[in-house]
Length: 175
Image (cartoon, rainbow, N blue to C red; front, side, top):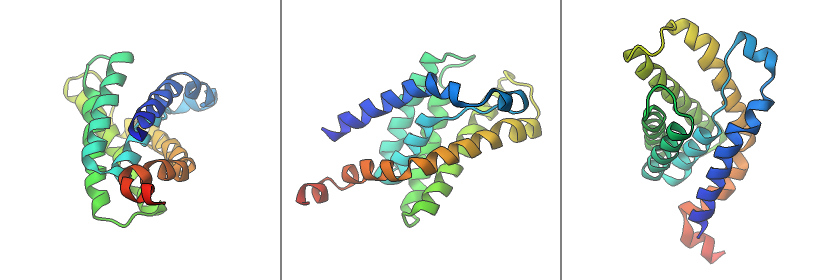
């Protein structure tokens, strides 16, 4: 039953990402750099950290495809592939590290960078973007990564409390 609540919460986060979050980014930031917070990516990466790489990859593929369909860009499947790949890699690395705030934030940062580089690489290979690597990294990826890490830090405790009972359902029943 908690699994259904998680999907409903992620759908709510998806809607918030597309509506209210765009209004919270100051306009003067957008004149110099391009900041695009990815709430759903952060949530999917937390799912990978706490619930495992397979579940994270499935959520990444599903919500990435939803993002591709709703916010149709030049190609379908780029967000789905990027979210699924980064979620799988983060989940794989999370199995080999101890769970804590710092390691979780480092994994979120790594997953976010994998997602951004994958997205940029696909667009660059198919010649959809012609931006230079340095320009894209400094003016799009780094600012987005910093904002995403601030958001990830702010929601760490609620996500951990939400996801840990799903990781160990028997322990949650015993309490």
